[in-house]
Image (cartoon, rainbow over all chains, first blue to last red; front, side):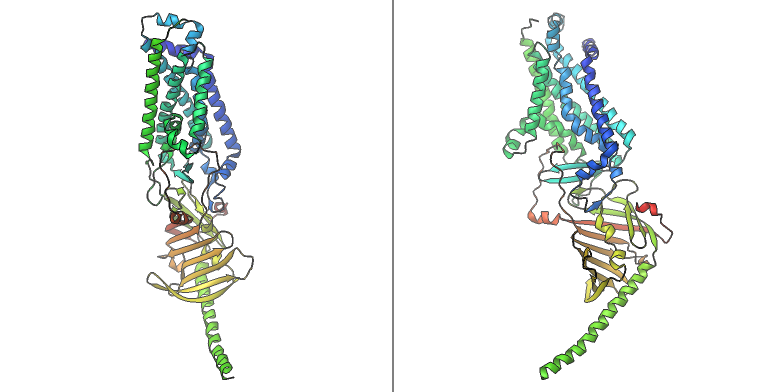
Length: 297
Length: 234
């Protein structure tokens, strides 16, 4: 298994498209950092426009590395599934396209092993991509903007809230959020892998994955009660943003934040379990379909 | 005819009483101002507790800087703090600065166990933002215990103060600042929020209550008349 995994990782590392994801992430992060360095206060003014007459606060301190990373992740983690699909959707279909799939299954390894190794390789790629995001979006932002207390702007039902997390209470939240994001993006990898079994080239499964993610994300963000109740709970995209739950700090009865607390850990845990269940179902389906597949290419 | 004479007699009796009271409150305010005027500047260390429905923030250790005539700055040296604007602009020096108001004696009231003189201050400038200030003065200690201010544009403010070892300078140990606030609304479409299933089931009364904010500042120490640099007010 380990040898197979090494081979898969070697194949991924040799594909130019692998590095598209890293370049794309870096480009987006740098653009955000440049924009906020140049005129981040305008963004802050926009976010606080309804209370700027009532409160005064230090806007320069508010735009710090932690805040920047949150803003970047908020945007990036919607696009990153597409970058994951670029690699994971190529896993089986790429082999079929190059004519190596029949050769691969003729080796003394089971089809289950092939799927599990392909999935493991895609998961490792996902972890590396998130590590790259942590380096560029978090550590580079901390280097450029410095550290400080973090503001989180949030809509909750028909209300909006401003949460303030002190600087000594942030890093563990990012560690947990990146770990959660790894699980969330692994669902995309598993979905892409399943779709790649049905295709003879990688374009189809990549586009199919992207379409599924986009459509489900749009539905997840429609605020219509009937959809909220009957559709959203069944869409994996509703749980992709669960990493934000680590930044919804718990409060006491007076609204005072409690250091080290989470507002709703059971909801995060439930989301995490749903995502893990998705991975299990998608990988099981991949194994079943791949085992029954008549491989002609 | 007899009724007119009685009315004139009554007016003759009552008008001097009002005049004496008016003089009393002006003298009282002058004495209170005298206390406050002893302070040219100060730097204070304090803890601020903010209680606003949409703000979820921890208690903050802040520095409060003041310089005559009315410069006041509240700074969180270690992090970010949301400071109600009114807390800065509606301070005692602003309320009592100059003599551009008419003081009206509104009798006495009780704050805790202390009897206080209630004085209403009406600005002489018709265009002033402050419409009316009511101050509750502790005549024995010559300090203001409570001040209520109604403004044209920014709602109402209330300051409630308790005093300790700095009472001789008119400086409180604790200020509770109540103010009107609007609901906070995020611009649409800027966040994809995680819906954790919790809902706000707030009643209309709760929503109305949420439009009142409170900031509590407890002072631990003052450095009085030691000089404060202009830079801190920028």
